[in-house]
Image (cartoon, chains in turn brown, blue):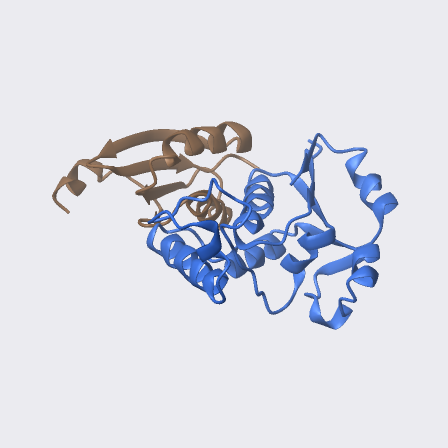
Length: 85
Length: 155
C-alpha cells in the first residue's frame, strides 16, 4: 500500500478490520482498546464507509479520544487514544 | 458512572431478523451499556445451540432478488434452502459477520439472554438444546430490567 507512509503516526497497537462490515470494526476496536493502558493509542483500519460516523460516535460515548479520522482511497484510518479509567 | 441499560425483545427467528437484535446488543455492550435480550416466540430459535436459521422471500416482497420470481415458483420445494444459501453467500461476500460468531460476541460481552419460559413450553423446546448462557424466565422477569432501562426495543 503506497499511501501508508502518510499514516505513520505513533501508535501502540494496530487493528486491521478490512473487509468487515458493521458492527465488527467497532466490536473489534472495543476489544483491542480494552487490552491497552490509559493513554496508549490504537490505530484502526477499516473499509466500511459507515465506520466514519460510527467511530466518532464510539469515541463520544466511550470517552476514548478520536485523535484522527482519515480516508484514503476508500480505506479509513482511525487513531483512538484510550481514556484514563 | 452508572451504566446505561438497553432492553430488547427478540421475537423473530429468521436469518435476516436474527441480526438486528444481536448487532444492536453487541454494539451497545461495546459502548458500555448493560444489555438484556428477551427471546420470545420465534426469537427463541436464536438461542438454539445448533443454529438452523433460514430466510424466504415468501410474504416478504421487499427482499431483494437477483431475478424476479413469481410467488408460485417461490413456493417450490428447496427454494427456502436456496434463498438461505444465497443470502449467506451474499453476507459473507459483504463482510457481514456470521450469526453464530455474532451471538458468541454477545455472550462474551455479557449480554444477558432471557429465554421465554412460556415459549419453551409452547413449542416444546428442550432446555439442553439452548445455549447455556440463556436463562429461562417470564414477562415479569423481563420487566424487572426493562422498567429501569434507558432504551427498550421490540424486534
